[in-house]
Length: 136
Image 1: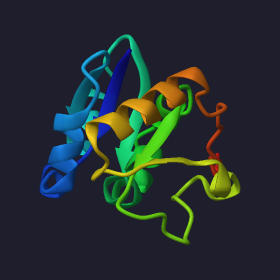
Image 2: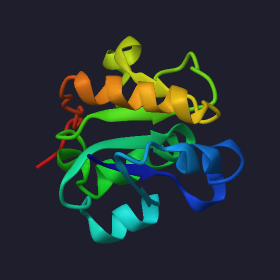
Image 3: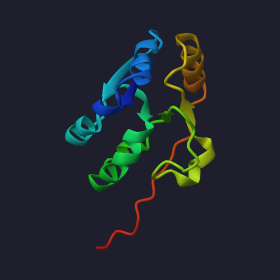
């Protein structure tokens, strides 16, 4: 299965590099920055799910909405890569607050393998992002 890891370059260090290096080899992980996504306005063909680094998602969600990328993002399961489960919800997903699947970037290769297999077996349900009130 192909996964896209949405992570800006300035966050891709330390345990997030370990996350990329420890990702199970029976799946493909492609790293994409928010700039790449905004410029291409597409996700790689055959992608099973998006794994988003929390700060990258929080910082760029409004841009994704502004440039019309939400329909693209809501058809794929979303997993969050975060050092901790923060109490505030992810932008655009507040009603889905306790249903997010989190991946710890400092997990060992074995732990990550088990988490990814569990994610593949039972991906989170689809989600429709609120669009707000558009004025004609």
